[in-house]
Length: 366
Ligand code: GLY
Image (cartoon, rainbow, N blue to C red; front, side):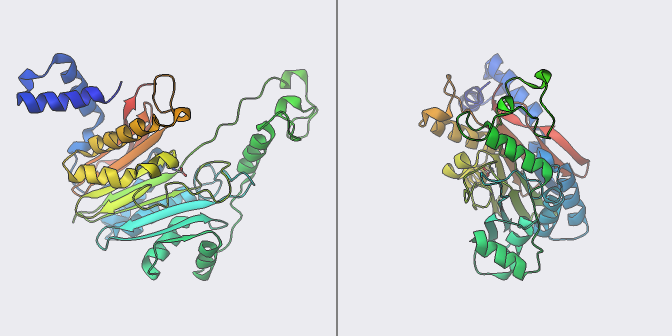
C-alpha cells in the first residue's frame, strides 16, 4: 500500500473541510494510518529508538527521570547495545568491512546548545557514541574520522578493544568464500570440509544461501519534561563495506538531527539513500511545517523512493526501492512516530506507560 492515497486524503480533507465529504476508501486508509500511529497523540517525556533499542529507550527514560541531561541519557541508552556482542550491527560484534576490520560510525546532538559531535570509521573503540559526545563536549569540531578519531578516543581514556567477535568473523569469512565461484576462496558447496573442519558428508552439501549485506544501526532520541531534545545514532554500518566507507549515521542531518524548537529525527537502513536526501534534517523540517511525526517520516521515505527511481539498480520492476530505510521522529512535546519503506518493521519507545516495541507505519506492503 502506498502513501499517495493518504496524500489524497489530506487533499480531500482540505478541499471538503469535513469528514463527511471524504471518500470511503480514503477514510479507511486514514483509520489504518491512525491505528499505526498512536504515538502522534502522545505528550510528555519520551524516548524513541530503532527496534533493537528497547533496553536503550528504557535506560534513557530512567536516566532522564533521575534528572540527567537527555544527551547523556541517550548515549548511555545506546551504550547497552554497543556493548552487546549479539547485535551484529552496532559496536562489539558488529559485522566488519571487506578486510575483516570493524569500523564504527556515530553522531550525537544536544538540542539546547545545537551542538553536535561525531566520529566515523573509528576502529577498536567499543563506545563510539561516547567518543562522539566527547567531540561535542570538549572540541570546537563536529566530526573526527579514522585514525584521528581512534587517537582522540585513546587520549580520553577509551581502551582499544578487539571488536571482531568469533560470530562476526565467521560471518565475514562466509561472505568472503561466497563472493565469487571463480576466486581462490572455496564456496561452502565447493569445499570437501565444513568450515569447522569436519569432512563434508553429502548431506552437508548443497548450494549455500547468498550472504546478504546488512545495514543495522541504533538511533535513539529523547525529550524531557521541559521539551529539551537530544539524539544519537551509532552503528557498525554496512557489512563488508569498502574500508573507509561512511554511512549516514555520523552525518549530521542524515542519520540524526535535532532542532530544539521542533524535535529530533533519526534513520536506519541504507545510509547512502538517507545521506542523499538529508533524511533526518528533512524529517525535522517536515515536523516544523506541521506534519505529525509519523507523517514526517513517511514524507521523507516518499522523497527517497521518488529519487531512487533515477538509479535503475535501486528499484524493483514496479519502480519501488529494493532496499529498506526506517525513519524515527520525536516532537519536543513528546509526540512520536516511525515509518519504514517496507512493511514489517518495528521501533522501540519508552513513555510513562513503559518501554515497548510498536509497529512502524510503512510506504510499501511486502
Ligand atoms: N544506516 C547505516 C549505514 O548505512 O551505515
